[in-house]
Image (tube, rainbow, N blue to C red; front, top):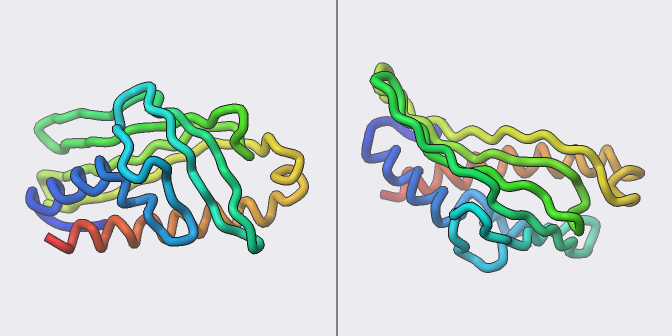
Length: 146
């Protein structure tokens, strides 16, 4: 949960659109604030083991849904061939009108692609868990800053 109420949901949507969930210090996106339009290509730079790795991704679809109960907004990107992993990641914020809760969700499916990722699977899983935790905290801070 990153907030409560419509104002927090609007801030969460703005934060997601500005890729604030990816500004973690040890992980950055280039360009810094790319579009979330389908077809946009980004470079995800990750600092680990004393070096930076560069991983290409492309926005593959958007999420925008509204019912009487909730409203969702987000996007997904898929990895490109030079990414260490093969897969897709969805970033979504959802406003539940019944409870007023604003929730940020990350859903991912991936497999190691690069040889280093295959042999370094425990490190890759650790980085993925760290990303989930830090990304959620970045969204909490961005949503609360309004």
